[in-house]
Length: 188
Image (cartoon, rainbow, N blue to C red; front, side, top):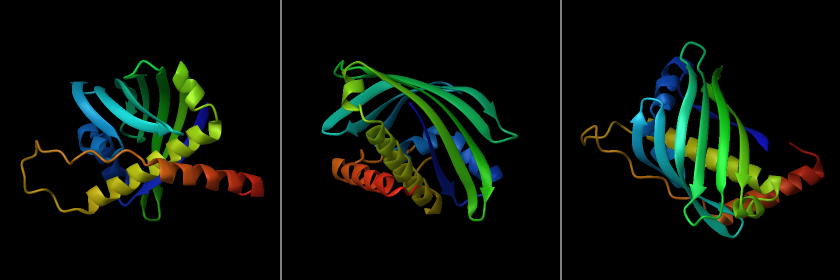
């Protein structure tokens, strides 16, 4: 399934791009994510905890930047992960790009996601997957904005901020219901 998300950051593209390309710096902003290993400058290992409906899942996997265009501020990423309890796997190909906006930069993300195994059954409804992705992206953007607004840490550069908490089932359920209502009313 394919879906699009976007968010804004309060920096112009030439300043926002290096921040977004610093995976170690921004990984803690992603709800439920933990960076576990830097394989090389384009490949990372990590975990992400997500909730699809009533089911909590933790995927361990690999993220690889396949293409990075620093001039045009675009990148293509592939990710794959397996659920820790053997309930399936997820594979994603995502492209993202920055565009100037009135408040800084708009980050546009296009994702092609494939779920397999029991995980595919948990997330059967496309609306639930899109709501989950939207909620994760919104929380990531809010955490990133807070990180950018905070003064530089006084601790050493090796200290990373704590990982963001996984997204709550209650907020996700609310998002699914709200999106369903909007769809029925014909609004976008």
